[in-house]
Structures are given as structure tokens and as C-alpha cells.
Image (tube, rainbow, N blue to C red; front, side, top):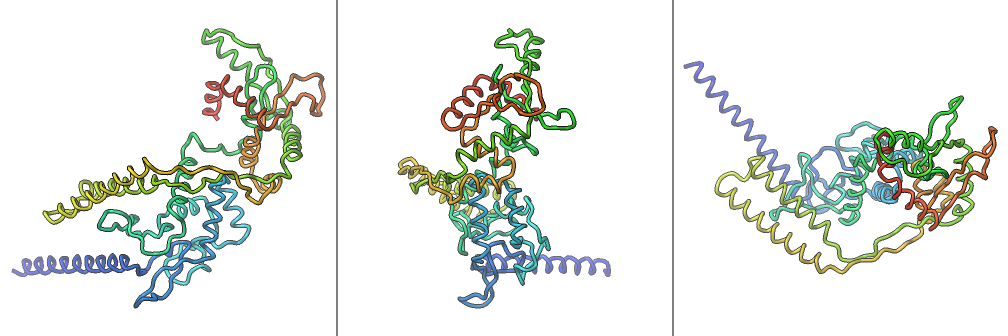
Length: 407
């Protein structure tokens, strides 16, 4: 009897513990739905303030941090590298999300430096849209869409463009290789037209060379026809060539303003369509994978939310079908090419050359010597450079893709 009573008491104690946990969880969810702050790490861009409409505290926009976020987003959308952005933030002494100086309440990570992981985590946090997050997931309204009860820092269009850009960078095919050379994809052989790649010459000096002979032998080994001119593989000094091309670029474009292509305002419901589709997918997971919406009442609530989401999705798709398209215009960034060149890393400088139509053709060596013979270099920019690079890329597309994949 004693053992039986002990087991009964233990069961009721466990039941009471579970009930307390459920009450606390429900209370927290209720407070979050009311827009109240319930503790935990304060999202970057927000600060804890007294609730102006009653008891407790709420999250309000921290204007200084919001400006930092918007500045970071502008640079990401302008194709600046994340490493360059965090280096600039650390040099400027901008407090990181975990810096002890930026918040007096809530959990801290005690990380005083910016890192790429910190930046990606912050930029991918839907709380920047004003959404309320619980257990890593947005709290949903009765119609299945995320609950928004605090001022957003980013609008939906900017958020979606940001996520698309971060997703593009996460794609292995779009990643920039570490240590990429300045003229990769820009330097071409004047004999066979192949792209030139870097290697370490004597004394470890950087040089560019054509790998046309290697490709010629590979085609011969496969029994393919030996088409085109047989190339001996010209080489050229790397550092002095890059300095010469840089000098030509800055002389032509250094004083000009960097232009940014801006999408003019138009009707675009694609971000809202994507949000509704994601909400539908999450709702299905809650029902069938996570085992929520149990019982008859749960099935009814699930059907109501699903029907509302489907109706909203159909309405958005119809509006998108008849949406008024926006235009694209170029506007100055307020920064010259020389200024952006100075603050950019190698990958950023290479992007500037590519955008300017940079194309360099290397002629065969005419004489020996250690110094660079600049008469071997034909440097093109603008429309002619774009056309030459496009023609070379089309002619050597399979080989270029294979070389890039091998790194």
C-alpha cells in the first residue's frame, strides 16, 4: 500500500508540474500576442521600454541600431562582401548584437565582435519584420499568417530582396572563392582566346598563364578534333599586370559616381505570396508532422485556418497576375569608383571591373626581360569589353565551367 501511495503521489506531482509548465507557456504566449516583452535575448534593432498602454514592458525600435541594420542591408544588396562589412563595423566600433554595452536587460552572448555568422543570423531573423518569435518559429494569427505587433525595421519588399541575395550567396555555384585573383574571368589569351589563371612562378611571384595547351592535350586524348590555334601557353607577370589594369580603370572611371540599379515602386505581391505559401506549409507540418490540432475542435480550427490561407493565396495570385509592373532606374550611390575601389576587397574590386566591362587580352611575348611589356596588354572597358567577354565566354563555356568547378 505504501508503494502504491508513493506512485500515486508521484503521478499527481508530475501532473501538477506539467500543468504549471502549460500555464506558464500559455501566459507567455498570451503576453507575446499582446505585444509584451517576456524576457530573453533582445533582438538587434530593438530595446526594452515600459509599456505605454499598461503594465509590463514592450520592445521598441532602437533608432541607432535600426540605422546600422539598414546601412548593412544597403551594402549587402549592393553586393558588398559580408567579410568587408564586418571588418568595417569592427573598425568603427559599432556594438555587436551581443555587446554588453547595447542592452541592460535580457540574455547576452557576450560577443563584442561582429562575425559573418552573427551578421547572417541577424539578417535572417524575421523579427526585423516585427514578427513575434517563439521557439524559433513565428507565432501565427488565426488566419495562419505571422503575428506582427511591434514596429518593423524592414519592409516586406526589402526583406525579400535581402533573403534572395543571402540565398544566392549560400548557393555553392555563386560563392566567391577565397583568395580569388583580381583578373579571373577578365584576362584572356591573345593566341587562343582562353581564360588565363594564376600560378606561382619562380621565387613565388604571382603570374597569369593560359591553360590552352592543357586543354589541347585533353581534347587530343579524348580523340576529339583538334580545333583552333595550337597555343603555347603565354604567361605574364601578375602584380604589375593588375597594377596596370587598375591604373587604366581608375583613370577612366575613378572620378565617376557608382550607379545603383533601383526598382521603381510598382505592384508586386510575390513576397506576400511566398509568405502565404510558407504559412500553408507550416500549418500542414503542425497538423501532420508535429501532431497539433488534435480532436474534433482541432480539426475544425485547422480547416478554418487552411481555408483562409488558401483564399488569401488565391487572391494574391490573382492580384499579381494583373499587377502594374515597376521600372528600373539608375541612381548615384554618392560614392565614386575610386572611393569604392579603395574600401573594397579583391572580390569587390573584381566586381567593379566586371561591371565596367573589363576585358584584358594578352599578346605573345615579343622579347625577354623581367619587366612587364605593356604593349602586350590590350585593355577594354565599356560596351566593347562586355561584347568581347561575352563572345569569349560563349566560345569557351564548357571549359570555363570545368575549370571553375575544380577551383
